[in-house]
Image (cartoon, rainbow, N blue to C red; front, side):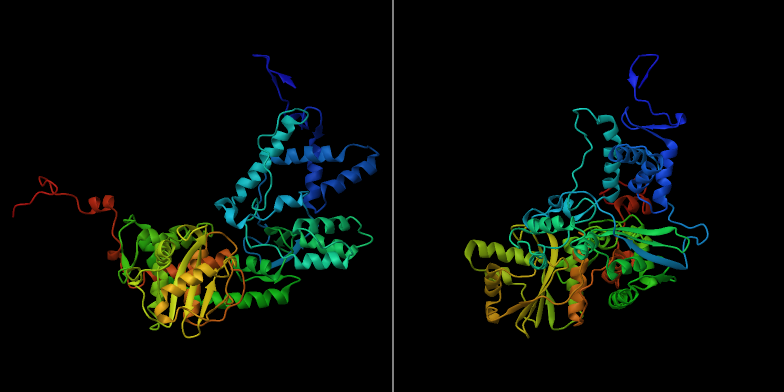
Length: 546
């Protein structure tokens, strides 16, 4: 501790010119030791292994966990700069070497990663601020040095959750595989998923008895996937919750600005098959450079955001605001993060626009099901005037917003396709959550289509479709599913990358403004006043003399 000569207030000693790093006023690390541990990390040697080496070499025994905390405190204060660029290979290396390091783990209780309740999913579960998560971790480590040995609780301590580093995806976990593993190893297969995982984790401690199980579960924990040039400089890093797959490798190559590189990987065949399947499907949705230029021009200037610029019939208008929800200007500049939610009108308009290409198909709005449900809840019958926009067709496309208790609200777009020729309802859900239709909803649909037989004997099916890995692109998946269904395309069950979602957004946005010109996009009022200033001596609203 040091004392201020003016006010005599004791201040914490932290002057690196002295050659020491002060962790908590009791544990001080020499800066050469900190740099040695950093060098070990740069050469793929864990700090714990280096500390064991120092202990063995100097015969100097100390508490490794305390030193490790002090070293983490030092790293939290260091302003690291990761260039991800090799001085010899430049920004676009001709050769990339892919590898996964799965000998990494956080010592976190299994209960921390409990999946969210489907009925209580919040926006925080569907989106993640990765920069904020790591910044909070740095603050927690720094504060630890001040509060160690005191009764004060760390104000920055942030309990990790399932959605701390990655958005929540998927539904309930599969218990069958865990139960089979427990039975094969002679332990009980009763209880919850957490109980089963805990029993298997206990067996992991007996590495000599169950070496294969230890390796299998250790790999299942995920790890780090990194791509580096042949000089050992890392260009890409991704933290994995689950074991690596060919899909993770495809994400890297598909997201690269320069794809003219040779990639060396242990999953070459799987990566090639996965990339060919998804890339060929998404390539059907490529927008021309001319259309991109028009979209960029129309979105660049200040224009009125809420004036209707186009309509499909009388029911489905769109505005500039709707176009920007599909493809904001930043997204045209290779900014994959600028992906907002699609507005309801954008989805309704685009699906209706796609139906114009098919004579035997029609679309409804997401609000139609809301109107039906109101009548059904009140009268147990959908009144005729509510069905005045219902048309007879071979296929009816019905976008839905789901995710809450009632049809009035929701946070996720899905698509129902009622196929009268095949007496079936096809369900398109990019999150694979809402894959069935309740008996109550089927009774409602039967009443709506009472003049077409009441859907008696119909079945619901879940076609092969693309999957999403985020919480914002469900609307664009519905638009793409509508177009794929109209074209009767058979797709793979692949999860699309951010780059592929970006291409889909650009494609649908350019199609939505197809046939429009700059004159169809009204300028904002401020811009209009600059272009057409009022003549002197004329009062606004008053008649002018000729």
